[in-house]
Length: 48
Ligand SMILES: [Zn+2]
Image 1: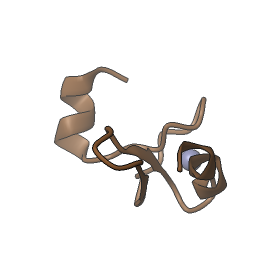
Image 2: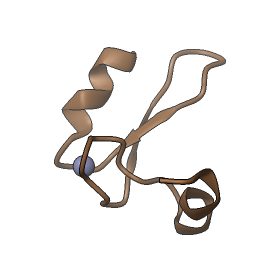
Image 3: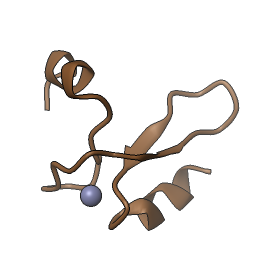
Image 4: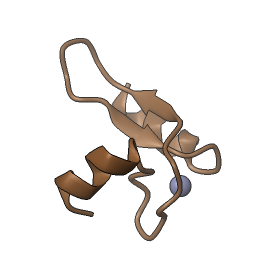
């Protein structure tokens, strides 16, 4: 997913093959957040 498109649509789930809206953001302090949908939000735990 190109950055431009992601910015237009908002945050998209980063799970491979998933193109749902990423409503759940995961980020360590001062790092770029990673976004996942409800279904894949567990994937974000490893970024914390
Ligand atoms: Zn997803």
